[in-house]
Image 1: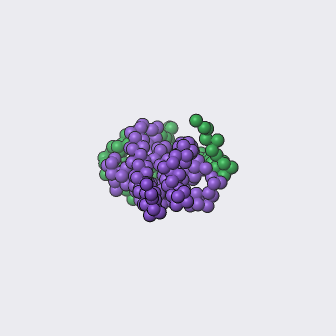
Image 2 (image 1 turned 90 degrees about the vertical axis):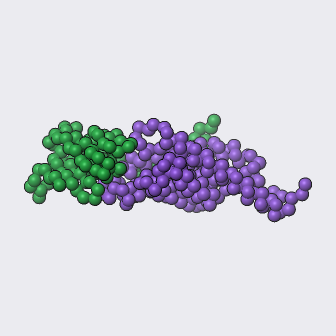
Image 3 (image 1 turned 180 degrees about the vertical axis):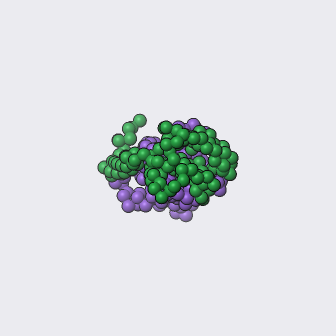
Amino acid sequence: MTCSADDIQALSRSRRQVFLGLFIAIAVSLHAFESLLPTPVPWLRLGLANIMTLLALYLYDGRAAWSVSLARVGIGALLLGRIFGPGFWLALVGTLFATSAMIIVYRVAGRRLSPIGISAIGAGGHALGQILAARLLVVQHAAIWQVLPFFMLFTLFAGVLTGWLAALLLEELREHPAFQQANGALTNQ
Amino acid sequence: MKAPWHFMTGGDWLVVLLLLTSSLGGIVSIAAMSEGSRVLVTCGDELCFTAPLDQPRTLAIDGPLGQTKLVIDEQGARIVESPCPRKICVSMGVAKHTADLLACVPNRILVHIDGSSGKEVSYDLLSR
């Protein structure tokens, strides 16, 4: 069977779409699962869905990471019945901060940071974005900044944990032919 | 399974250390603040209640969802009962230091501790 360059491009494009769809589905499931877990202090969550954003960023690119993180926030909130509620806006701003921070730092630092460092930065950005949104939208009081260091400390652990899980997964997935071809469809032919 | 430090680069350690020291520094500086003397309660956008921290009392504050119960005693101020779904404010524990904060976001109630002993404030209780 012969394959033209067009076919290979189309194949890698649809493969990317299928995998991103899968990543979004897994991210939404992780998000929904996490919201069922009891936590000592509500609002503190591990952010396991961020693993999928990291995978999209490392296996594809920044646009893929945006697709996964934004779709996760939207679909996740819709599924849990929180869409357009105060918690949704906090989550959205947190995710916007986290995803931009991760993509920018990934572009600047490249291989000097592993997914663990990128994830820690994303987690810090998430905490910052959430508190900022809470300050502007919900609690109009500067005293809210007092909780930021506590948030940051917890979020650092969560970020390192999710980054580590993403690094473990990436090690496996990078070897897989599906992603090797996704990365170099045109160079491999 | 490989441990996290197997993956971590020098840059990773730098990022983690930076975030760790800044958050710990923030916590220490907050903890170092002196004990407050006044409880301020904000309902929605306006200040609706102030009371001295050293007089034990129980307050019922009305918010959009219902009544939030605030207890002031020798330990400090804490929310013991709230109609909000997730009881975040209850789990926030006791506030007694300056700028400590208890927030019940769904019920739009914010309790915070003020350090000023209220030199210009002649009243010892204010309720609106």
